[in-house]
Image 1 (cartoon, rainbow, N blue to C red):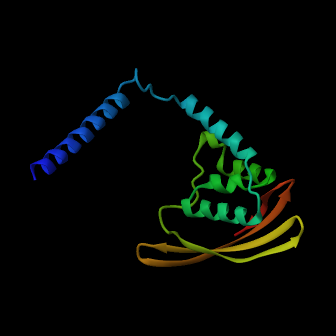
Image 2: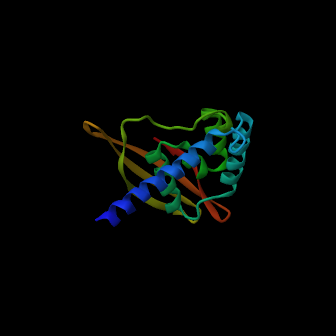
Image 3: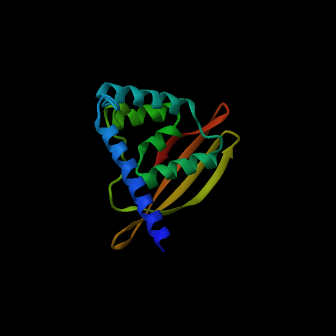
Length: 165
């Protein structure tokens, strides 16, 4: 019994000590200097460059990534699977990523689930997919919305050329 209490107290003291060290380090500007606004903007530009190089390898992956954007209310997911023309439209609509937030949607309703109504191949380089998003609030179901994606092949990858809500 005493051994168990000693072990419990030792664990608590160790956790306390580790948290104290982390807090002191986080508050010490010599150990962790604050990141400037300019540094943050630079990091966002680097992330955007990486997103522009990464791409979906199938129409199904495009749909999944697009739906993840809805679920997380994060426009970056939509941007990531968009063709260059649509990326430009998003930047005009939302502003440069380094200057704002690409939050889509609000705190409520949130996405409960989604289903692919159809995903049809129009030809070897074009698909059309309709996604139905089911929304919910703390009071219960809140209906659904639908988005139709026009997905095209761009060399070895796939992207959303246009969409309709």
